[in-house]
Length: 350
Image 1 (tube, rainbow, N blue to C red):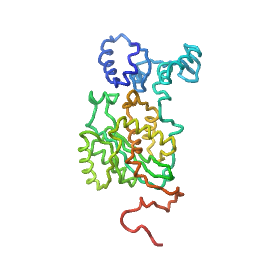
Image 2: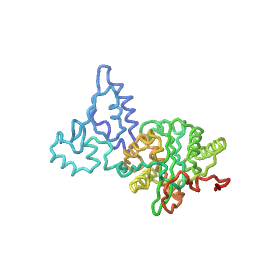
Image 3: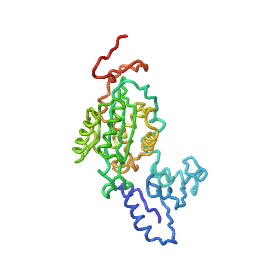
Image 4: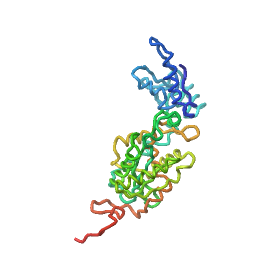
């Protein structure tokens, strides 16, 4: 097979159909004593080539026009072509096409908005004092929106997405509007009741009473009804927040672009309290996300952690951030008014 996948297959979300074609047609016509030989270009980090690279039944080699010790390297030694020919290709192609077609790089740096050097700022949670805590939720309950042909076309990997939940703390210091990520969790297995129980558990842990949730279509009424029922069962009180950007065009791309800009300005921070496994997955999604074609789709199998965290840039969430007149030195004996109980005395005489 020669180039079974092209850029249009990624842009038009045809990757699942190409995988089904390979599984249902190609595999059935190759005799048991036969073999399959494929040459092609990597257009997506989760394309069909990634399945073959991970398979113990395939022998693979990834080549590029510049390599170091047999591996693609943008600063490596020219292979197959002279340096002058490579320079000509760079001039004729844009940066993305050169990365795809000449370097076999499915996620070229020039198309990625998230820069690990300028966007990733880790801090101890206790250093970010003051502000208001908000729970962000992107529901995807089990048995709703599961793997069907119509759904797999948009997912790109023929499986359902995850229900992702994030806890962020917001504050304004001068002209800076800051957000810190405190906690993350996600699962494909949560049904509606399990998902909302997990949400209220995280909210109790962080003393949070505000819940901003993305919900569209006919499922909104079902989500709201179940959420209220679970809240009564759990004895939880919450203030729902309606996201302003849910229905706008290219919402996911706009949200993520705003998060990248916020991070580059040192206004998005990551606390040490975020579970390591979830943090690694969140950063992996951010580092490799590339929006394609019309901007409604990206190249990721799963982008739910990245997407739910980016809700912290929604105007209805941002406006909740209280103004902090000045940064106060942290003390174990001081407490913010927002953290104090709503009943009883706030002051104790010694």
